[in-house]
Structure formats: structure tokens, C-alpha cells
Image (cartoon, rainbow, N blue to C red; front, side, top):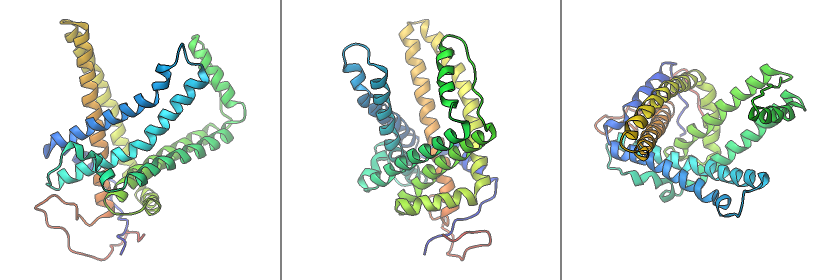
Length: 310
């Protein structure tokens, strides 16, 4: 029997984030090591797909540049859900008290779930195309031409912001797109990895959960973005201080320290984001059967009022 989509209180959004911040207490080497591996693999993918720009003779023309960058971005979009699924796997194993290592990031490949996870990237691209079509309709036929003029003018120091025909509709379309495109990917990943659903069932249930728990998901997202803004400002100050201190020895030392700070922050960012999604999946879709070792799972029960059967 398919488990119900549980309706959770608004405050659970904050609880998911707080629990994600405490993830490193169980197996920090595996969890944060997997976060570093995610960044390393993404960098390798982008490096390989942008290699034609470095191997060509002379400066590449704009058309070739845009084509290569577009293909590299497409590859990254397809690879990212697979990596995030692997990171959530490492988080789940560590939280359950089972032995896990950073290289278990590649568990989706061993479990033959990489293709379905990569297809989430295709869905995200399709949603982006739909959003772009709606924006073209909402902004008017001349908006993008004026936008390109604004971009060219910005290079020369003159910025003339174009006005859309329906600015409120533009904002609404963008908000709806960002919410559902992000929710479909991040909610579907644990459904494919841990609930054993195929991609069509995972997308349907993720869309249902995104509507059914709109408040808690949005609350978690707003708190996460607020934390990103605050931590980003602090990391900028730390990076500046590291650059100044390292430059007392040698400029290269300062640059190396800045890279180390940014990489550590990136790993923490990925861990907190995936940890929040993992705890959201556990609260909304499971009966606490993923509780850490030593905690007895809840007894089977019938759906409570407020729960939605799939």
C-alpha cells in the first residue's frame, strides 16, 4: 500500500533546517567529504565540456562560446540530481548509524537509479522552457530585445531597465517556476532513492506534497535563503581576512586560503540543503522508519485526518 502524503505543521520547516545543521555530529568525514566530492565532480564535468573553448585557436566567436557553455550547463543539470541523490544516501546512512564513506556518493550508479535521477534534470529543463514561454507572453514581444540593449548598455555604464507589459504576472510566473522546479527535483530525489518509486510516480507525489505542504516547504526555503544570505556575508568577511593574512606570507597563500574557505562553505551548503530535503522526505512520506539506530519505529497506523492518500 502506498504511504500517504502527510500534512505537517508550518514549524516543521524550521525543524528540518535545524536538524540539517547538526548533521556533521555523526559522521562528518563521510558527509562533508561527499559534499566536497559533489563539487569536484561538477567542476570536472564543466571543465571537460568547456575544453573546446581552451583548445581552439584564437578567441572563440560568440555563437561557439554560447553553444559550448550551453552544452556544459546542460550536462551539469543532468549530473546534479544524481550527485544530490548520492549525498542524501550518505546522509541517510550516517543518520541511521550505518557505516558509510564519502565515496558512497556514487551509490545511485550501483543501485541503477542514476538514469531516473538524471531525468529529473530533463524535467527541470522542460519547466524552464515553459516558464520562458510564459515570460515571453507576459513581457511583450519587444521586452527581450530591450533587455539585450540594457545588457549591452550596462557594459558602457548606461542602464535602462525595460518595462514589462505585465510586471505582476512576470513576478508570479517566476515565483511559481522557482518553487515547483526546485521542489519537484529536491522532493523527487529521495522518493526515487529511498521510497523505490519510478520517476513518474515520484514527480506526481512531489507535486502533490509541494501543494499539500506549501506552507512548511516555503517556510523552510525562506529560512534557508535567509541563512544563505547571512552566512554568505560572513564568509565574504572571512575570505577577505584570510586573503589579507595569507598575503603577509605570499599572495598565493592568501588566494589558497580563500579557495579553502569557499570550498568548505560550498560543502556545508550542499550538506544542509540535502539534509533539509532528507528530513522533509522522512516527515512527509515515511512513518519514521528511517529513524537513527536505537529508536524503535512507530507501529503501523491508519492515515490521520489531514493526510492525503496518493
